Length: 128
Image 1 (cartoon, rainbow, N blue to C red):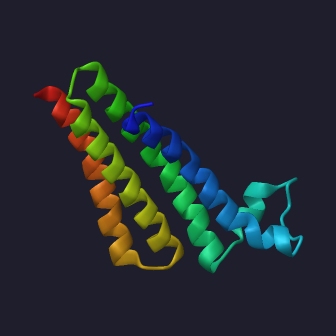
Image 2: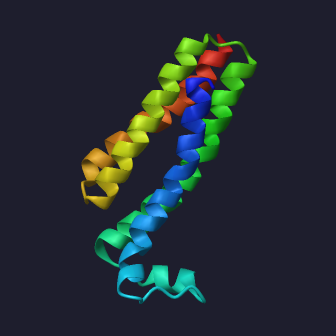
């Protein structure tokens, strides 16, 4: 499997990791309400609320990234460049999630910009 495709697969699981982080306290203390999960999630505060927000942002970032990888591959961008950008995006997203959950807003914004920049760079790589 190409590294960039593996990065897509890992990126697809990142929102689920964030969801687990958001809900794990509710599983431990039995407060999680699977009958009304969105209402329960809306009441979260602190670290679990930030994990839930990281989940939403991870879903939002995923299609831009995945389509960028696939477009670059389809248009014949050298695989090494695609793999490098995909890996950089994935690492930036991991840092982003850690910063979001850890309440580091400036570092979080920087990591988001790096990840988004890598996704956009995949499209520009396909133009040349």
